[in-house]
Length: 139
Image (cartoon, rainbow, N blue to C red; front, top):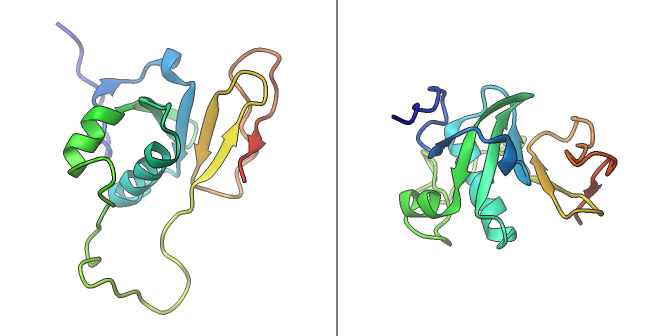
């Protein structure tokens, strides 16, 4: 019997337990980020990185699980359907500071691995491949 993934707020988005081998593409979200924000970020990664079929999901520095593109798109209604959160139906926005995260993409210049961060004040991610060093921010 395959063990079930640990329960966490993002369980509805994931389909496999955390797999360190799948860290070729990883997304790091802030601890406590809303499920809708995480879903929107995952959607952005899958739209902008066609070669990515699975994403490792991490909260802060804690590995959680893996998000497969096929299952994610099936649950969200299709590959290009944007995530719509509570209150998004009318397309209106509130005055004031933005309340959504921006996805910061980084690539390893040596092996092509990628990392995605939702917080700008985190250090530049390091590639998991020994000797590759710091990743480069995608522009």
